[in-house]
Length: 177
Image (cartoon, rainbow, N blue to C red):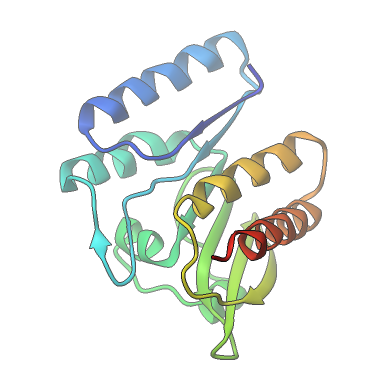
């Protein structure tokens, strides 16, 4: 196993299972990547899993993660701070995981724009796409899979972020209606 990806984990028991599975994988392959997509909530809905499960994700899974992919609501909730795209680009780095942070659904300079920001050590990259209404459910899950796949294929972070954003944008455009 070269990588583990976790997403929707609605209970503490699910989080415990994921934690143990990651440790078992890493016992066999210390280089296995772990991408944590916390899937705890979004705007304007707020948190939509049990709060103890969200806290368990923060306490048990984030520290294991090589890559954390989360939306702006999740970034704010998990760090207890308000984050903006400008703050990320000015050099601030959220204290999550041990490697790369991908923040999605960030506010762009234009009203009709949505940004994805990758923070990898001291480097930052941003992609922008048009904000669409009525986006189908599951786009965050697909984006996590695309990020992990492109990264495992040997692409650097700028290419991984760009390719994953472009592929997701094409899927959303094809899914309208």
